[in-house]
Length: 174
Image 1 (cartoon, rainbow, N blue to C red):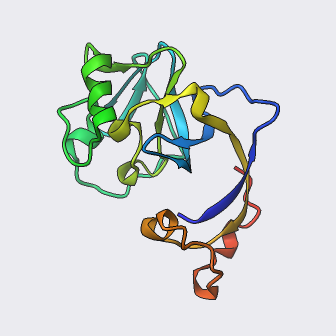
Image 2 (cartoon, helix red, strand yellow):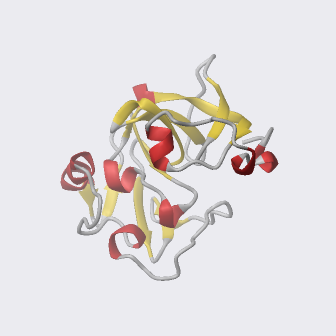
């Protein structure tokens, strides 16, 4: 956490599955999140033993990182009975949009996952992204500092602490 990113907002980009998108965070619209779109309207999505399937086809995702070797039933075999920090919007998604063991993405919505799959608070936990909440496609990291979630949420970020600046992320093309 702690990247400052340039986002292409105009002209409005068409967001497709596989794209990385910047969007208003559903639980706090003042925050902007960046995640990968893995499902759009009509897509069927599931995860089996950490492997993502879209429309019945297993996906090869070279960008995904798995950091925990142990399996977590909800996170790694999704959809499943909720456990952990599943918000009401995520529970509603599970109640209304599961068919044949898969999440079915409704019109004008997206299902997003973090590339750091084992350690990502994403659509599995808070539900779909609305089309109207998509801001655009991230293009470039222009500043990066190692920050905690609490520092970002408290807007206590980007104080330029030499030991926390991640120089290797500057000008990284996304």
